[in-house]
Length: 349
Image 1 (tube, one colour):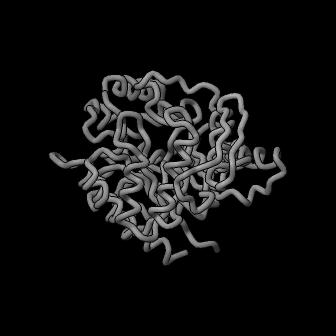
Image 2 (image 1 turned 60 degrees about the vertical axis):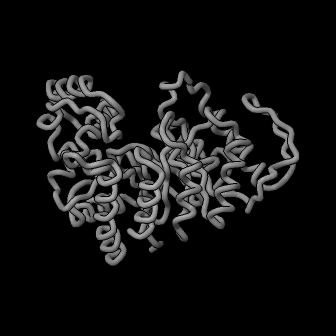
């Protein structure tokens, strides 16, 4: 069997010093890739990736995921070349439609074309060659990057969309399955879309590594871990709609009403969660959308994901929410708890 690959994503709701300590902990815990969230108005993903490269030595580092709207492809390419230089070839390029764009007045129009052209320009510039590109979104003619470049970097496309997953089949090195409620049927659909994209350009779909995205929250206090991600579960229940787990309509409406009374990003440690979510969202519903609990419980749940036919998993780390605790402290608890779970999984596989 192929070796297992685990990716951790940090949403940077903390200062740079605390972030660096978390990046170090992610590597020590046994993760293979570190993704840094790119959310408008939050700490800058590329600057934090450079800092992460300086405090780690083996783990791959990239955005999870950035967008093609707030940076020109040439800016992405320059940032990636710099990251690849600093990290000695450990950079990857995670891209999708993006998060938080509505907060800054950006309407992500023509996402397929914009992502496609961004990847084409980035790859051309990283190749070290002169770049002449005439697209419908971007148009440039340049003699190339001045930044030293170590060459191409792996491209990861993250999405819940069938259309963007087909694009991943065409172009990506890594396809990130954005849905959190993974079932045999949903996984089959994502793999079908990926295959359709690969077939459309005569590509062997086996060239694309596929990683399901999971929300991960780990604590020896399993009940607290579950409580920490109830808002996450309510958020994703609303996103998936009728394609998600079956609930009585009255309960579904009550959850959505409580969600509407909540405020702040669902992943923001300082968000307000309506108190009714605590009783409305039970442990069973939480586990529909998250890998959650004690290290031993999490190990079993991750194994269930792998048994759906994967050899890698992308983990969006969720902070354990203790009274008076910070996001960094909560994320560190999840990271440290993950170390035990990952070691156990690798030993049994």
